[in-house]
Length: 114
Image: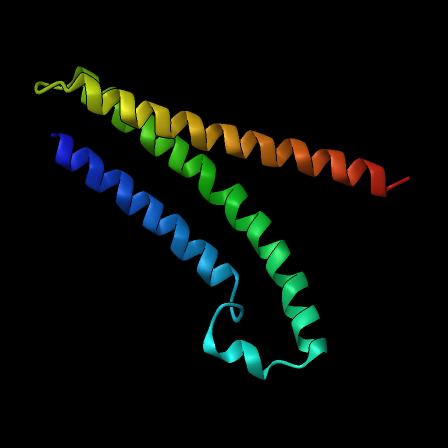
């Protein structure tokens, strides 16, 4: 059961890394050198917006998924307390990062409206 838990956490981390890599496109790829300064500026502004949206959509989904998995691991017929704690910790981290992103976004927006 521990191996399954580790695999699930690694797959989730790989998924987040893939989301970040796609959100950074075309930066950190071989096509980055072909961009003009204007294209770099446009792509960087687009990527910042995309990062915020992707994180605000995916982090709550991961937090809920990890929370449900944690509860099912703890209360299932083959309960595994260690795996449940790991999944619960992942859920709390995702929820915390989401909360920090939302709080930071509010603070940033309120100052620019003035």
